[in-house]
Amino acid sequence: MRVVICHNYFRERGGEDQVFEDELELLTSRGHDVATYVKHNTDVAGLGSTVKAAVGTPWHRGAAAEIEDLVRRSKAEVAHFHNWLPQISPAGFYGARRAGAAVVQTLHNYRWVCPKATLFRDGQVCEDCVGKSFPWPAIRNACYRDSTVGSTFVTATLGLHNRMQTTTKAIDAFIAPGLFIKNKLASAGIPEERIYVKPNFLTRDPGPGSGDGGYFMYLGRLAPEKKVDTLLRAWRLLDSKAKLKISGTGPLRPMVEAAAAQDPSIEYLGFAPDEDLDELVGGARALIFTSGTYEAQPMVILETYAKGTPVIAGRLGS
Image (cartoon, rainbow, N blue to C red):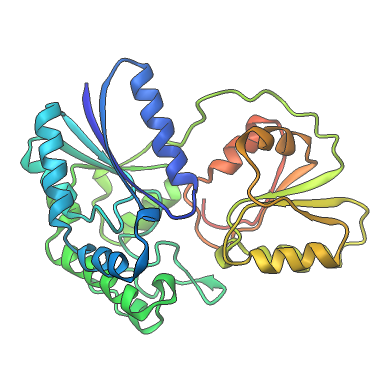
């Protein structure tokens, strides 16, 4: 099969980037003819570039034309989209369709019903925009990157494409990594019969870990929706000789660094390289997953189970 895979990399690497790379590797290894269309948010630097990317969010004509050309040249039968914000935009779906490809999108998050994509605000789950054709509460609350301007552009994008019925007229099928995200987005208007559940996967077996390191592990973004602050408060309440190792980066990094400086039982590892994570996760007594939002299917949990390490998580979402 001939496939074009499209993805806009995030500024801070996350699970969606990993899934994109894993699916590319799997398709290629099985003999499929795969071409990629990739953008990087790290390329959007400076005021001029940021404004240009924001303005193009509702309809990025250049990306649509490039995708259409790539699909035609590669004679792709399928165009598979992962993240489209902000440098691809939903215009990419239309470009792929004009070139004759079936269009598929993986639903990594809740972007179609939430400009912030996480259904999380002010420390808790928020569904204020779910079901609204124009999700205006996101502008009032400056949900996207705490920016009223940025939130306006992303909200306008969703409003425009809800009006254009893009999810029904420009996308043939959606892939959801789990039932929870499928049901949530179907209840908000995405045609349920077009959403297919296909779990995320690992491309290799890392082998079992020892579990004898005597520490607990947190691995992920240091962001409010991940409830890192809750983890640190809970850790201070424990009367335990165990250690807590934290790996990741994000806006709450200063909080984690301060906690590690004050408490010798907490060790902040920074952004640990992949080659170290197998040993770290495998040696842990358990991974602590404190996310306070509706996760889709976190890769870190799959990677932890592959090492035979238990997971302590909140009973929320998937």
